[in-house]
Length: 107
Image (cartoon, rainbow, N blue to C red):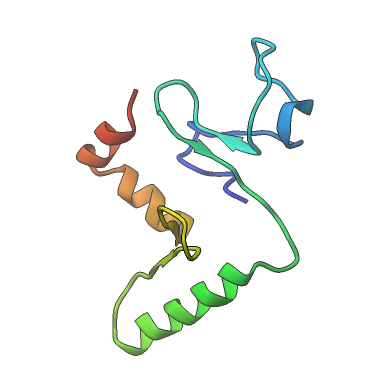
């Protein structure tokens, strides 16, 4: 579960929420975090089932059928702002190797 996320940049947090803490004692807010040089938190969840996984598998199958190498799923709840974006972690890591993307997420 994202254990190799960005090589040594991400740090695994075994327990969720404030039960666990950073090295300096502050509560750690997520299962996996990116340290201070990025302005993003990655919350990793492990469940037996997620509806989004089924939707994403369908998107991946559709991409393969059309000869497209990657799939990204955008979902939005009715009457709410913003979208939830779902992609393979390998694609996310490749995107972070693009200097412009790194600059957007860099503090």
